[in-house]
Length: 382
Ligand code: GLA
View 1 (cartoon, rainbow, N blue to C red):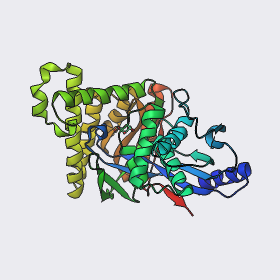
View 2 (cartoon, rainbow, N blue to C red; view 1 turned 30 degrees about the horizontal axis):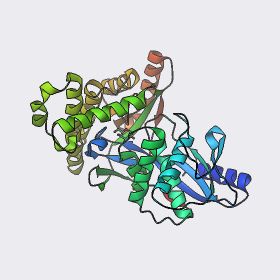
View 3 (spheres, protein in one colour; view 1 turned 135 degrees about the vertical axis):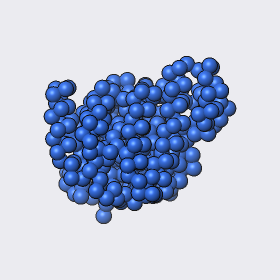
View 4 (cartoon, helix red, strand yellow; view 1 turned 45 degrees about the vertical axis):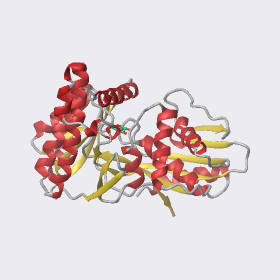
């Protein structure tokens, strides 16, 4: 499936370091519904996909470690005991962060070399970063017999993102990437970190992603701001997280918060409810209902939570107008990346053509359309 990608990192590794590496594949993810609910300890509904990061990794006898981002043809040598985050936006931070977080847990690492390459477009909102973090922690766990469970590994990846990348993300991306199950989506309770798998078969409908191919700046700081606002309101409500609050609770403190923060909290409470309803709709095979909830999610993300952008709104509008997309919304953190669409299978091709044309006309740039398969989580490649 990702054979070419895996062969590439293996070949580059052998060329560079002259030994056989172990190989890891770590997928990106989609999310059907439940956006910005994870850090509010609520529900999300992600799935791992058949695109992600392939990594080749092996111990090194040298006095330094090397990480090689094959896509960017960029290489860095580093010492394990002197890791500091580099400037914002540096790919190295994902690797350094994972290494540092492992060491913070009193585990001893030796030097290693890693070569990685991905096929998730960066900025697509499909979690290439979680895929990379997971590939590094999974690889190091194997190489040095660290004995981490998968659950421990995803928290290491998440902390790397918080402390080295600077994004105070929730746990959805790392979870979905690590624990994905082929042909399934996972209804994850982000408080208990337990998920219920749902076999995905939308009969004559399918999922389709459309990438705006934009990533607006400030998305990281806007993300962190949203998270702080939610935590602030949870505190005012005397609950551990917004997951514990109802719309009525929120009403009681309406005067104590700004109207924009009120809307944000309301969005989270409603989105969490939509994620629960979506799982029920799926159990009842009520695909129309699921679609409705997905459109509702976009409206909330755009109008209340304010993490959409013109390009995403345009794509969702076109989906609605088409008449054969029964649900569409922006996916992931926002401010760019992809929309996820629930579309009649037979109409996918014609929609792809019409939406691509309209997007080009409107923004004078291309969008990209992806069909994805739901896949297993981070694993060794034999
Ligand atoms: C990003 C974060 C996730 C999650 C989503 C929004 O992908 O990494 O933790 O908060 O945004 O749902």
